[in-house]
Length: 150
Ligand SMILES: CC(C)(COP(=O)(O)OP(=O)(O)OC[C@H]1O[C@@H](n2cnc3c(N)ncnc32)[C@H](O)[C@@H]1OP(=O)(O)O)[C@@H](O)C(=O)NCCC(=O)NCCS
Image (tube, rainbow, N blue to C red; front, side, top):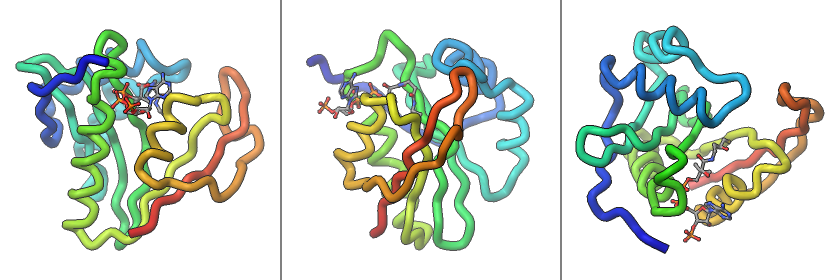
């Protein structure tokens, strides 16, 4: 499959917020709105890393870091850029950022049916450590809690 060598990953800027909200609307049944990203922008322990091709936002990962733990809030690649290595670039950058901050553990919840995301996380060594019943809405679905320790 085609890999995109010209993807850069950097922390988000306020002007990225409309593009991030657009990806949310495309990818999620209960999308984060611009106000939600504004809240992340104004929270000292919240981060969003943005993948770009040129000026265009093509993916992102949002997360919180509290002491030595990172919880991933959301992770998405714009549809036409999927399966081209954007998710791996975002995860590589997230992990090196976490290691640089002294994070020892990264965790997240993912829908049990979300095979692409689960495959991405397993590729990086995340392990399923529990099930949260009815964790997600629209549609209602269990979550797998996945955990990566350094
Ligand atoms: C999960 C997601 C972020 C992956 O992004 P991506 O940019 O397509 O990922 P990459 O191209 O870097 O792929 C990385 C690895 O993920 C796995 N993967 C990605 N898409 C996959 C698919 N459709 N089927 C199986 N494995 C897949 C593979 O292991 C892949 O490695 P490979 O290409 O060497 O086989 C993307 O599918 C997405 O945005 N999904 C919708 C939003 C979502 O569900 N987010 C997760 C919320 S917890």
